[in-house]
Length: 137
Image (cartoon, rainbow, N blue to C red; front, side, top):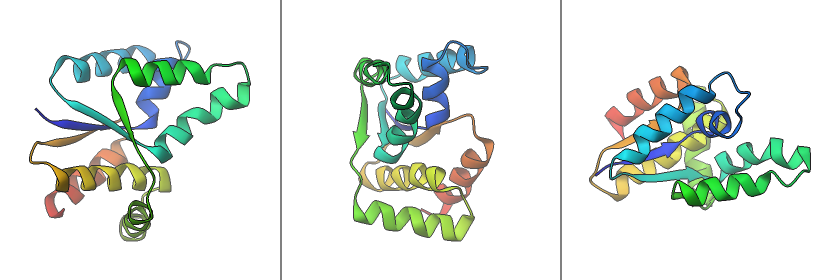
């Protein structure tokens, strides 16, 4: 089975045909969709994704909602414990706060279920941090 935590960079590129990584994002998401895999995203990541559409004030945030439903991505609610864990990860690794929230979500999901947990991202630093953290989490 498996579970993947979606990072903002892939989702933003997927929704924006003008993005340099759009084609790559389409391929990555098709791969994610073909397997029987659970897909999640942190509420912090969703906020990051919504900045552009809400700034544009053109109703494009509805496109984000449709894509979340279409790709069956569950958004994990923010919690005090996840915020604390993200802060600890940032303090320990120096990761940017958005990445720390992705990592905190992945660690939480790894602890909740026995299936492999991956992070879907183009960010090599984030993926490297996950590789290091998943060995000890």
